[in-house]
Amino acid sequence: MRNVGQIAARISSAYVINENGTVAGSYTTLNVTIAPGKVETVTINNVPANELGRVVQIKVVTQDGVEATYILTLRG
Image: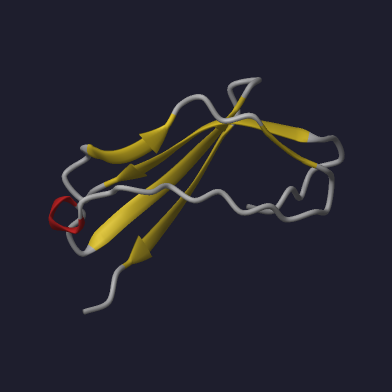
């Protein structure tokens, strides 16, 4: 995740949502702070591959309630 803002972003949760709109994996107790202009990695483990489908949405939420999403197409 990259913080393109002017203040630190405090990430509190991250979700992997499948093409049916179902949450396939999540971390809801994150405590990751990203300084302005910096990049941090958050890994969501134990997401069953058979629950993903071809297209997934990654959503992260800050402690202030700001959401960012990224949609990607999985290969093979």
